[in-house]
Length: 200
Image (cartoon, rainbow, N blue to C red; front, side):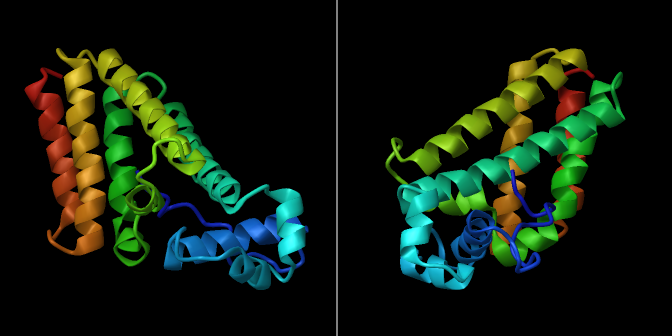
């Protein structure tokens, strides 16, 4: 999924501790230029600090990228938590809420792209720490969605969760490349259809 609805760390007040300024600068630059396209010097300059200071907080640029993605992943975990808290006894509404959450984020995705999708394209090595963050995050999201589908009484919760995941991920890519119109509405309708196919 995407971070499009999160307020973002970039653009916050300038008087922050160095580590926070570095993360702000990294977020903005990684979003606009990609992880591979940004050097440590550029991040340090944007953060108003030095390379030496950056390396005091992060051993490598890869470690900085992994920490940035951990923050993005934590925001998504929080969004799942809020959806479950809003409809504590209604897993079907939770699944619908998840689809609405992504649908509402698609307009920003069309401009910035999903940080997970963008980063995966740059990180073919599965041992890269930032890629490991993404893979662990996506696996956890699928487990939580499968639990929702199980609680909703769907006949094949694993299959339903996989199909909904395909829809959520595909909607974000389609919004980013502009290939499909009314992506949000189509996404919500598709997720409803998946729940119907599986006997909700």
